[in-house]
Length: 73
Length: 404
Image 1 (spheres, each protein chain N blue to C red):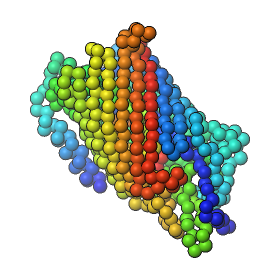
Image 2 (image 1 turned 45 degrees about the vertical axis):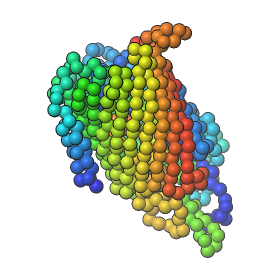
Image 3 (image 1 turned 30 degrees about the vertical axis):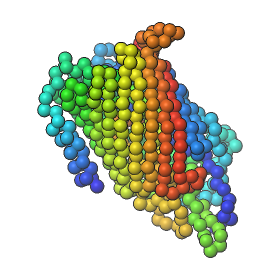
């Protein structure tokens, strides 16, 4: 299981790297700084989503956020 | 001592309390590369489902820059259950945890005179967060301490995150760490148990083009201690005598969890972005899941208004020790729907409006935020308590943010 996990993540990263051969200069990043392009721009809203999903589903992690205090198994 | 019950008796449990027992307490954006903006924000959140759980939980948060490279943030949240069954019927539930602790094997309501007992409902949870972010050149480090307390549960968490930009900030690598100390002392049990959790995350964000950014994350978690849901009851059916016995759940006391995800944002048009994501999860309880996300965000009025939507689909296998029904005592006893095979869908709509668009407010510093979410979950077998396989829930968030 652990090997599968490591291989999967390596593939994910390689997938990103393989498509990113061109360096985007800082002055070319205007579009990337728009609020609609930012990952998890609203952590509070994200927390609400995770709040009830974690209660109803058996998985967790790799959601782009850190959290605490979950008493579940 | 042998306690049996006639089949047909009903165990009514504190479902709503359970909801918060399991709640996510805090959420920190771990991929941020800028110092947090100074702001104060008040939110009102609500959750309503067909299992009878109705909850509201207001929160207030505050961020302030101490210097050009250091900022602090705080948050206070309180959970309030507005409608739920508060009665329990645990008087004869066999508790293996109590046996382990040399306590009476059969539980009874604790003699507390206030707060959370069956006759004194107290469905409040208080959460306090304080955190610090600091930049060392381009490298940023953040630290948070989270403390949560309610009448039957205490949790203390420390979380740290390190972000290192590379290649003219076209790439960012992130390391995250969490350690959590939890104490579980349900009022309907005679024991107090500890739970420890470690979490590690490794993230990688990559600018692919001027309109395309992607992110990958790997996650590992190790939990030990009391991993059961103490408010659930496992019924052992004795078909020969038309009787049943009630037992406390028994889970493995360790859990290793792995997850990997990738997501991407692509600017399709000047003010329109598509967002997609996929997450794989697996653990040594044999729970495996796949999550697919697809959404959009559209800006209007010179970025002063944002409208968006997101659809999330989730598929999960059951834990190896989960059973919908028990006819004899097994090594493990688990009826938790969360560990059942399931699929779910989550449809979210959001709208953010800057105050400058509203004549009554007329301030660019104020943003009104609202989100409405519909959640549907279908488990492979009916829920142990509600006896329903399908869960429908509505979740709302309304917030006011003021940039300092």
